Length: 381
Length: 135
Image 1: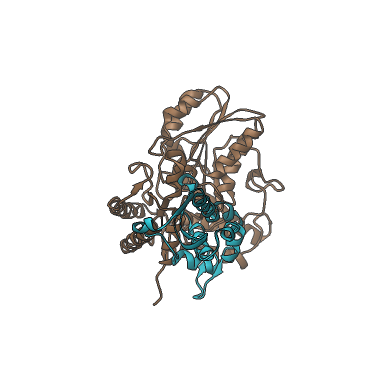
Image 2: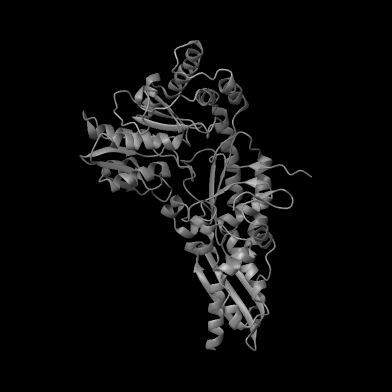
């Protein structure tokens, strides 16, 4: 019997939608020309990029020249943080302790270079408040970078409220600026940068049924950033390198087909799974149940190590993720859950993220296999 | 270590020996029978992600029986399981000499970063032997 595999790790990456793949394909071999070339084929590629940029600008409610294409979420975050810091020799940055490493690592590096960084600790629910940000702001604060939705526990931060506090604080001044990493939020939340009130926003293709290796940094015009990749005038000089036409075209298509219906469907499935998980002895849900992405479930199983559960489920054909150090490439367990609870709970955590192809029956199979695994591992532990 | 295929062609992150011991652990302690064992050693902490508990039945300085419990990842479980097979029947002085390297080798290798955190069974066993000698 061929076992059907059940993918429940959409927050890690999502499969490329067939409609996205279709529009990308011609740009690999047929329409391969360099978009910077001025002969016809080059102009054709340039036009495809221009159209894609417009679609994304419409999605973000920004101008086309405010869209910078990058190689993905990590580069977008790096460009935002190093790019803004590059305008200064020193200064103060506010971020949270549960940011993605693509934000945390640049902040740590800047600390070594003499910048000061405040890492806001979220509350037990995994939320950072606008008030916390307000209290952290200083005269020399140049940048606030708070993620829109957390990649591990799916908690949604009050970006518009934070933007409001920053606006009140700076009055007529140019700084601090507000950046948000919206990689996990793109499919589900308001992405209008004017409604959000952000100056810089990152998102990428691989989380939204688009291709891997492409992302966007939306940067309001007039804001100066120091480019991190140099050697060409592409992307208005903010990001050098031949434009990746097929991936850019694919990213725009992925954005175009985002549907709000998916959000409602996944939320119902999520609530179903959470209600069933709560009935299992020793399971605790991590993070807010209210301000949470519709596709995220994160829980810890007391006395059982996450990697062991992951591998039991893998054997049953189910793909999930864990905050346990053991399954990641690093040695320390989930920083997010360690910050909110403790390291033991981080080692015991499992993340299940739903997507377009998740069915209720998949979750029933997950629950069945999970119970089996818990029983087996409790016996060993 | 990644991308090892097992006999069925399925990809698994660890070696086939680790896979076998993880899914079919040998000599797991049945806690109802704890009183049958005369030496106990424990190492690790839940915060670190690994706790190894080892019970030995030692007669005339020979390990007659070896049981264990482990809170930990697949390599932690597999390494304690294989150690139980290695040490059973050994003189305590010989068992005392078993190293993390010996266990790792018996498992057909482990990812480097896993060795220091998950192969702790040898230490727990030495603690059990020390405790036995103190009696």
